[in-house]
Amino acid sequence: MSHTPHELSEDFPEAGEQIAQLKQTDAHFARLVEEYHEVNRAVHRAETLVEPVSGSHEQDLRRKRMQLKDEIARYLREAEV
Image (cartoon, rainbow, N blue to C red; front, side):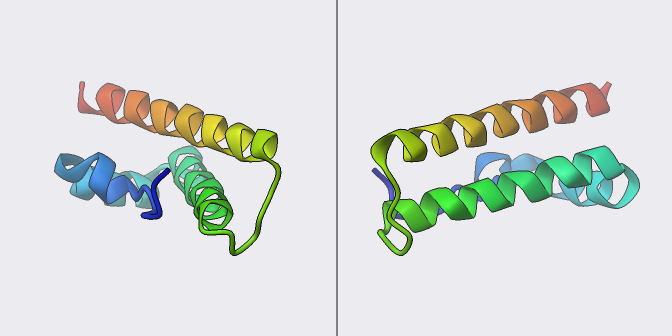
């Protein structure tokens, strides 16, 4: 269990500029990033017991965060082509 939020800038350090540009030019990508940040904050609050949740709900949040991160990674790869 980590008490450090999983920021996209840490997960994709080489793509910071690309992420910023896509957020400005692609509404779908911007929504993905915003949803990722919302879920990521919820996971962090659950991990640090700021907003305790059941174990199954925390796992669901973690799965959702991973799905969003995978979709963002896929989007970044396809945008490079």
